[in-house]
Image 1 (cartoon, rainbow, N blue to C red):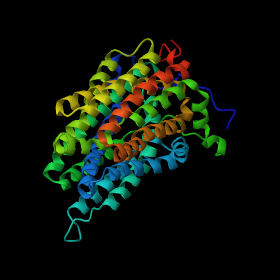
Image 2: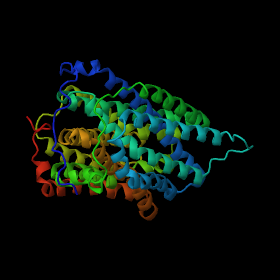
Image 3: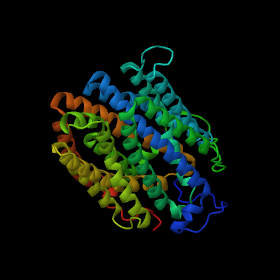
Image 4: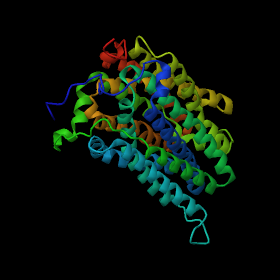
Length: 429
């Protein structure tokens, strides 16, 4: 491991023409707002695509195991690529990487449309194996896109606006996660080819915006390539117990408590609902998160952020368990909304801590490691949910996972005292 890794800094390029640090100042950061809209469009399209793929797979195979495989097949390539992805992100123009990720996803949506309408044949040719193949491609793209977005954000706003920018960005992401699944479910109910067409158009709009993100700073890293430089992000996180505690808490909480992969089963078999209701269920956590991010954008977290993160994870687990035992659509929706509220608090604290603690020239590599934590908690969590549901049933799988998340928050309270005792987000305060 490199022993000469640069120390964390809380300042960006002092020569940049930053504006005032008020909330309104965010809107005057034109490049940031352009990036925000590109990310909003891309995330909306991606969420529509995920709903469509999940429902499409379940229609083809009627298998909880196959739903879990969709998550696993997205996670494995991200796991394999996260180190080289982080290294490349610190060497390439980050806006170009971000735009290329949107372009690849637009191609996937176009191929799904062609396969659904049976282009070149008399019958649709989208199959279980093709969906798994596209899951691999989407997982590979995510290895680059997640880290790139994290590395880009703090270079587009001044440090004093970062906490608000993180909340604002998270709010936009949650808005996309609300609109995307709901719209995806509604359009899929009309015709699967329609949802894939809309996904393609949204991705293309994101590409156009992405091509106009002129991130002239920072200068891509020119650090010599070595094993130590490639693993520098891993080394940084494991040496910083505060960051390690925050990222690992989020990983294991969502790994245990996530129920996204099982939503088609709950919608169809437990709640006796269809694809439209599935879209509502999938959008519910994002609705809660959106409300909370609006609150956090207006009133950023000020004190006892470590304890608040631990409590939010415990609340996330409790609401997940309630969802697992619910047989009412509206109780399920409310429980999922609460999971979104809790998760939003955790995400804002985690992302702000990581970005403030990480030096700019290492943000791609650290963001890539953090991205694999996120990927593990989501994609691997979906596989875990599908596998345990095959053994225990969907209800028991979700309830056990929710209880596990609550216990996890208690354990982390004593295992990572640096996190539990953290008072302010910005260490300079």
